[in-house]
Image 1 (cartoon, rainbow, N blue to C red):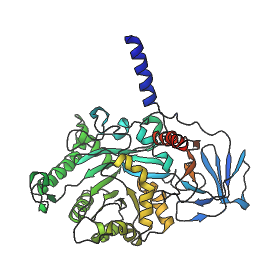
Image 2: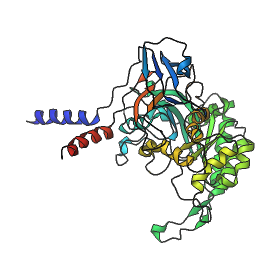
Image 3: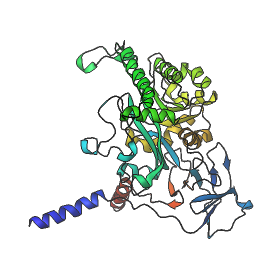
Amino acid sequence: MKKIFHVMFLLIVSQLTSQQTPASLTEESILFIGATAHIGNGTIIESSAIGIRNGKITEVSTENLVEGKYDQTIDISDKHVYPGFIAANTSLGLVEIDAVRASNDVDEIGDMLPHIRSIIAYNAESKIVESMRPNGILVAQVAPRGGFISGKSSIVQLDAWNWEDAVIKYDDGIHLNWPNPYTRGRWWLGESPDLKVNKKYAENISKIEDFFQNAIARSANKKTKNLPYYSLNQAIKKNKTVFLHANDEKQIVDGIVFLKNIGIKKIVLVGGRGLANQLNIIKSNNIPVILSHPHRLPTNEDEDLKLPYKLASLLINEGILLTIDVQGSMERMNTRNLPFYAGSFSAYGVEKEKAVEMITLNAAKILGIDDKMGSLEEGKDATLFISEGDALDMKTNIISRAFIQGREISLESHQTKLWKRYSKKYSKE
């Protein structure tokens, strides 16, 4: 009886945990004609022709100017073709169930962790990762959280057997969380929720400065290897990007000044909620921004209520390279809404194709993968999808086919299975 119970238990668990099998490379060359192609660089092609062969895009033109020969020609008139959306600064694949500590690899113990690599903890079989694809999110930057220096992020495609298969770019940068100069009272302890000066701000900055200086100085000593110092030293030597997480105006300025003073050349600002009054320092230093999503309240009580929605337009008008993240509450499952956040920005001053560009080519440029993806251009990976309508609108973001590196992937997920199951149930009533 016990054996039967164990066998039944294993069968049930296997059904609960089974994932989509990663797709194989599409052997036949394919030409899609007739769709509106959103190139990803701010332009569109009506009645387009998009050719795919051996995992690459081989042709991007109008359907009356096709040059190559293809095994299949598929008419997708009245549909839309987009480059795969790229989600920056996510923690996808690092946590499966928040309440189960064993499934949580998003942060480690300690404040200075430049040697931590998120990629080796990435779970390619995550059900949450799987649920991104039906909304067009095909690529993600997986970043650690916590501490002052969280560790290194990597960039993955979202249809893989394991992290080795998934990786597009290893260790693309170091994530630095700049201390906040202000704190709010803990209302649950009866403290005033008003802003107060953080008395440990100078002390925390001193810790960061000392750590960076020690890491730089450590290079002269080759007999002993302190892994955190060595890792940061090598990242600086190899000119890795430093992703500066900062929201408050003083945070932003102090963080940028510090990194510039120690010789960091590649800086990306992450967050930037209080950026509206500090555009000059961003623009003058040519710093790209991974901006917080707009579905939030203003940072300060005296700010325009719609400022979170207008901020992207302000940055774009200043010529600042920009993409979006969804860091915060329920960030992993919320990442699937990335295109709709871009759509919200487009309702407040950002042109529709610029909004598409924010989560395609702009994201690829910021993450250093624009030579491979981010736009529908000849020679780039065939990472794209076909939508019934506007992919930035949740009513018309209905994806029929998607490809990652030329492999046609499944668009099934736990949610789509439940939707089909209960659609059948209620269609009979």
